[in-house]
Length: 511
Ligand code: ATP
Image (cartoon, rainbow, N blue to C red; front, top):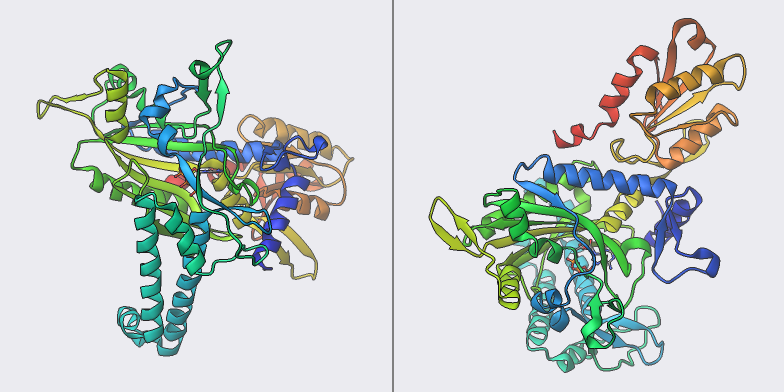
């Protein structure tokens, strides 16, 4: 379509115009990086949640869901490592006064070289056609080899300096690579500093350090501290999982790009508890399972890729991201982490309570290992919306803006449209509304010409429109119009409910 900034801008303004996402407290000029979900946004968000929750807890009989509180005992965050290690390296540009994450500046630099390599490979593929041997090409072509060596060199150096907490060397690397402020081109950088991302607040009337609590920076810890509660009360047998959807808070250094990075956001996380030694098998299992969940939505096979983590978080022994092709390019949508027994062992240590699982078969007792899947609900929302947004030229020369959202996720499933606002057509249409309203989120619309009403429904992604005309009064048939193909079909009212149920059902995503 258009360039990527353009597309993101259009998605943002479309979201606002049609009631998906509004800037927070807009009458006071908004609050940076905070957004509100409007009437259609809330519906879409709920449908995404339902798709995730059903996949986790219905398709997997050994996964149950909980809803833990946002406030937790402050020692939780000592045990989890967040008080000491939940930091991002930040760097300021002295000229532009802009603040950046040092790791992001370096990663973006590496991505540019990677793009050069891929371009070279694609060029060769086009040239050699069927006979193209990619492995051979990558290992022999001088430009590709040189660039790959450069990438590996930067990655190794960066990893080493982060592990040694050598922030001076991170800055030195930025200077050696001549990385400039992406906005202004200035290379006048401050030193790199660590910045803790947790929000603090005070509990009740207790003042001073004793009363300090944190807004949770991830939902996972609410699951860990409830491990025994759920395992015992639910008589769960390993391997099993606990899923949760809820808000998380991070005082991000830079929060930009619409709802991609906010300071208050929502996560859908699942912790899967396994026998030590089996965690990497389960890690592979969940990588595949989560990718399938994404691809079932039909948002384009090529729009996803795995990205293995170079710098493992303080708790992980293997980790990757599922990246999605957002309007800003490929970015993290979901993380899959093998978290070892780090969290449960530390909670054991800090709480002084035994957190063990007794395996009746092997008659041993152990601290389970954990594989986590963690996806940002807001990022998923942006993925769905930006992928769905399209401006199309139609055969008759007119244009439409349409959201090709999967019918199972679409906020409004069906629009009921009497052709005219007279002759008993509105009354007949309202009968159809009554027939469908309990099972489908629908809109009734009798204003303007039918073509304009179709356009309005296209713009909010309604997959089906039902039109009631004079024939309907005689033979109980209606026209059903499909959003993507714009094809119209005549069907009997008696079959309407069954047909719609099949078309917008979430079950089809799971088959
Ligand atoms: P990033 O590298 O983009 O900061 P992360 O690796 O810190 O993300 P995780 O801690 O793995 O993120 O969190 C799991 C998921 O939560 C991410 O994949 C992302 O979808 C979502 N998420 C994390 N931070 C934010 C944020 N500030 N705003 C919106 N979603 C977020």
